[in-house]
Length: 336
Ligand SMILES: C[S@@+](CC[C@H](N)C(=O)[O-])C[C@H]1O[C@@H](n2cnc3c(N)ncnc32)[C@H](O)[C@@H]1O
Image 1: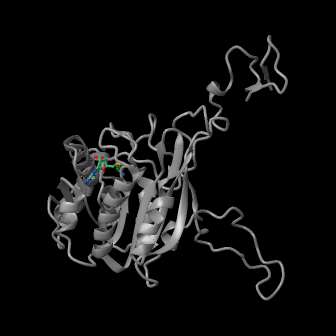
Image 2: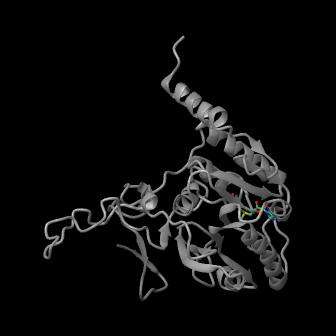
């Protein structure tokens, strides 16, 4: 019997991850294990984690906006709850470790409160030092009619000390002008930029997980795996613990496994615990489909997608309806 190359590869993946690396999923924190999913409240799990044992805490908490998995609270009570969890995370964090809290806006009666602005003092009061406020820009989301549609969220990154892990090389991105050379001075003629690529900066353009995204599940607000891969590769080393108090579909653990780190976290809702387990099993078997890190964002115009041309206009490539500066009753738009 002939075994297909792809099945052989899958077997290798599974054998490496499950047998050689002993990657079984356990439900309580044991420092020698590699994958922990606690089915319940994150505080219960945090209480069992020894001091200074986590290298990276990365999460996206509920935003208190009334999603199915959260009870909407007064902003003050929500912040008190967050503060208690953050305090426990800081206790468990290694002196060389990092915390990344990914948040958007809390919306109260049409008024927005960017959550990073109200969470910032909680972190600094605990002695943490802010290293970056990363803007995560994406294109899909609600269309607002009384304000501009929100197309970014932030990741606030804090470290426990000045001696923190930061590995830039694994997350460098291609240079814009890789062939640029020094044109004078002692290095004239030599390439002027780092051949490994450039620092990705603090504005990250990564598609969010909406309808057509290859990673989409039933969860309403999943992290894209590539977002967390960049944080894990730069802020941890192999074998370190990555912890996510609000697991959702387990993206943080998936990114940790992919890069030979340990992953732990908690999730309260059984349907998401099940999704997390399924996705982790798929990751271990090498069958989880994800969008690759650093893949350029799809551009419908470049791709020649026919939907950019309105069917009732000419066939001009790239034609779009534009709003007229001086519309009249008969005509509000023109084709350009
Ligand atoms: C914003 S989602 C996180 C999604 C996640 N980043 C992902 O990639 O799938 C927040 C998750 O936290 C869970 N949750 C809410 N309160 C929790 C708590 N106290 N302990 C653990 N999980 C909680 C919710 O059920 C929800 O799935």
